Image (tube, rainbow, N blue to C red; front, side):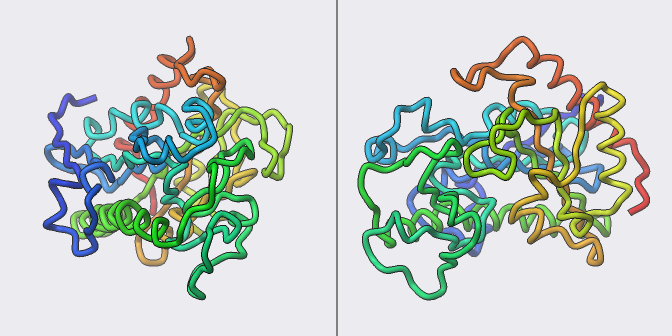
Length: 307
């Protein structure tokens, strides 16, 4: 792996470049770790590993801090920290998923958690909303209610404007920059998953495999890309499934468009491989998994994928 220096860009540093930027908390919306020179047509994103919990949010919750963190893809940004050294940018959301989930539509909201009526443009009927896991989640992933009291739509809308839109503006810029450089872009959306299916999942109570790869059942990326990643994990002794129970969220569906040169693949890693899920601490397998992911990054950088 080449030891490249890399540049870290925060949302605050980029606010003058983003037409969508607004709000007082832009400096905690996202961070981009870039290589000194982008040498491969990849963009990596970690939308759910943010840990900047505002005091006002924690105070409004009925959950203790560890329970609130149960929705995080904890440590995923660190597992992929070698991305810039391999020649690609890594976008990291710094806000927590329990506060705003950028892997949803912009206004995918559960009316049960708001004290006022929602505008007609809000999507109130998606499966994610039904489960309480919309853009502003009502529950954490184990089904526990987050809030002591209902919130206002004004508050929810402000969060979306301050965090969701700047994150996606940054992601779109990275995709556009990559396409301009290489004529195509391969977006890897980096996630982790609970080791056992949760109460709102279609695999409730089931022990999960090591890795789930999602490409919207073939719509979001080429067969060559998903096969390459699948083969890599299998060669390294890991059990892999495609598109079950996760076929890819909003990011995969919205950006993945192979016909226009953008391939999107969601990678879900079983949390039990690298962390204690109850205490949200790294376990003995952390170093081994990080090494496997780093070697995957090298393999992707060196691969001549026919996309």
